[in-house]
Image (tube, protein in one colour):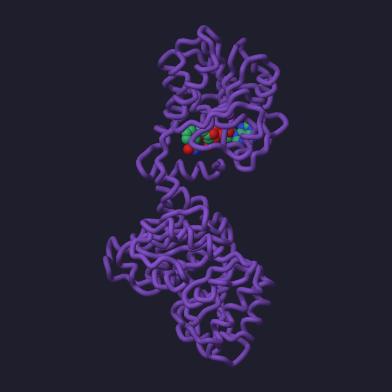
Length: 477
Ligand SMILES: NC(=O)C1=CN([C@@H]2O[C@H](COP(=O)(O)OP(=O)(O)OC[C@H]3O[C@@H](n4cnc5c(N)ncnc54)[C@H](O)[C@@H]3O)[C@@H](O)[C@H]2O)[C@@H](O)CC1
Ligand SMILES: [K+]
């Protein structure tokens, strides 16, 4: 099962792997034609009713495989307003090859031709809201006819993200859906065929540009709350700055008074809040104070960078996580308290190899080869794990993604802190697994950008300025 939203991600990832959307459209159209052929007797009349998106494009391809039928193709709208290049190219091919096509420019002009089979290619996963004209009238005409209805991908009017089918949507007899079934299709009284269209498994397994596009902020929101610092001061500053570079509007750091000035000194962009109590490290009493602030603002919390391993600090981290109910990126020393933790919070744990082993996870060099073990570990732990290494494995115990971005120069200290900050920024908007997967990928891309000119000599602090381009520009290319 895959949602329409996720399907668009996979499709974009496939294109980055070299399997273009046009190739996928060709496969879709071919698969569609096979099903149509199975329901249309020799000599039948077939009417294709197409929209201006790629759902229509699939049917333009199918038409080329169905030339032996009595076939008409109606486009709802003007050809110059076809929404994508690949749908337009396939439409143009039908014109040049002399197919029987017509443009329906006014809903009052739409007459469903006499036919035995209707191909409903008006709307697929690109729908938003109720059917608009002329699609609404066309759907009514299709539903009123006695013809067998074959819908492309989903019946038009159906929302492939939540499985809702609008009242005025098409009643399909057959649905040819692509790659994987969509939520809610099984509840329809239609025959559903799932067609393999040749999307490589890698497009789902490996984090790609589609994942980044889905998870990246499309505005400036989010106020991550970084609880870190004490024995170390650079780590929380890097995490907090990375969150700002990832689209957060403000970044708070709660730290011992003794080091608050030092952390602020790294960056005028941060809001550093010294602990009220006069301790050099996080204590259970302070954790209680911070809990109130974190809950009041409903922030994403980053817990761990630079906290150190004092017994009272680990106890403080445990108590914080046991009481907090929001979203937390748990990094560095705080990871030690996660096994056997009782919490209602949503945790994204970001261990490196040593920390992963310390938590009871697999102790391996090659995380990618051990992805199943990491997945099983996350399932046992009951929390999402982003295991950091040369490749990163991101898993919630059921869904597992791998990010291969990054470069050996990122072995330098601090790149895990930038990662934690990016995860926090993206978690403001996105599902935690999607956020963690995209963040891992973006952090690696930021390093790759620097490696082009700075090989093994760049710093984690240099990566900060590369994060925006890795997040918003790189994947637009
Ligand atoms: N994502 C993938 O991996 C693949 C997708 N393919 C096809 O592409 C389809 C998705 O294509 P698109 O993203 O172009 O979207 P659609 O073809 O589903 O629809 C986009 C068009 O519908 C219009 N529209 C949106 N909501 C509307 C409403 N409520 N009433 C009337 N018009 C409305 C939009 O303005 C736009 O012109 C899939 O369903 C599938 O058929 C295939 O070509 C192969 C691979
Ligand atoms: K459709």
